[in-house]
Image (tube, rainbow, N blue to C red; front, side):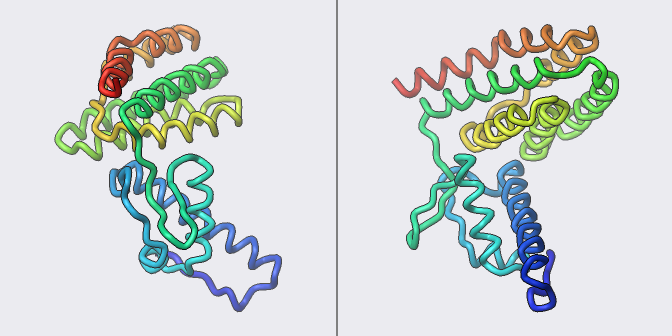
Length: 220
């Protein structure tokens, strides 16, 4: 929980402070999506979240608008705010978009960052292995693995696009199995010093292709 004193600040500092509070609310909502505490179709009560986080409803509304821009919530003024739902066909598109964006991110990795990145990826793989009995924790660890790859990209626009795609995919396919073999294969490809090899691994991974096809079949 966090609080702020809106009466002790000047106008300019208040704006900065409120922006930071909105950032914190935004991060809390994103964390809830990753952890499976907010799921597709679920309503978001602005007052409830404001009370939970110890803030006014203003930064909650601002955070919600950011999530809407990412395609993570649907907002109908004065009616409702709901976490975005996905049809099977839309879920298949999200999986494809996530894969393409993640490939693009990997392709921009600077070889100079690979040694440190590989250490981080190995730690993430170990964390996934330790969460075998907790589905949500395992999914969150999987999300964190690919977040490391996104964070290491030299391209801000790709990082932002890939991050939005990752959160949408978490909502669209919340029960997707965590593929540790894919994690290992990507890390192994990067160990060779060629990000292009890792993009090839991800692009042609059979389980991802099969999942895309299965969801498209469900939509037919």
